[in-house]
Image (cartoon, rainbow, N blue to C red; front, top):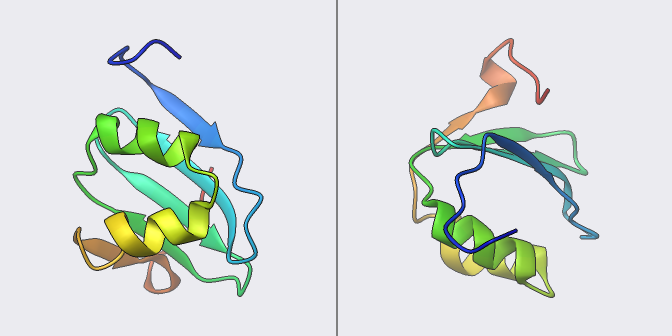
Length: 84
């Protein structure tokens, strides 16, 4: 992906012991599905940060350091929406 290129929706391969699946939308929403079946939607996540997340060797480590507790989120267990 060209740096700064506009994304619509991307599915991110995680290879993580915690994160089962991740999807990012160009409106800044990052949907995460964890192996424990919990699902979260993080809001207003910048595309530049997602580009770094994609390149990170440890997706879980990157998430814990730069996304978790840094952005507002919705716990999707209380919502009817699932990761698409």
